[in-house]
Image 1 (tube, one colour):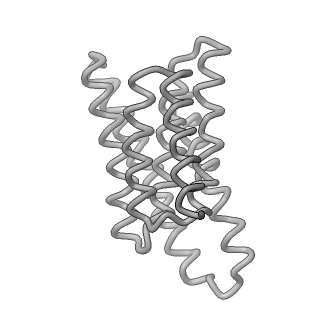
Image 2: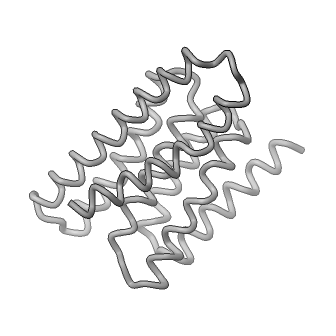
Length: 166
């Protein structure tokens, strides 16, 4: 039953991203869903990914298409957390970022905009890797580590918003 619930939650994430944000948002969500599946179908990273739906809802409500970037970084962080090690986390989170950059190229983003987005994404992923390493060493207190892991995707999305403001 756990597998069915996991897949149902992923289907909701993917369908909502497609319905609210459109094909670009769905493409990034699809890559994140695959990364979450490869992480062993653990519920904690998936539950941390679901609040990412606030970003396409916010974009729809405000007309601010730039919220696509925090949405991506939220999902990249959740994908990072789903992986067992920092190396596979970089691969999982990086795949979501690469999907985002591919979409942005297809959307015709200028090289300057792509460079800024790439730099901001690299900063967020580096912060994730550093925090993941810290959590691994501080893993003696399971409740504190689990609590921090839940907030990492939110923090990654907010950091992405800060990068957009620069």
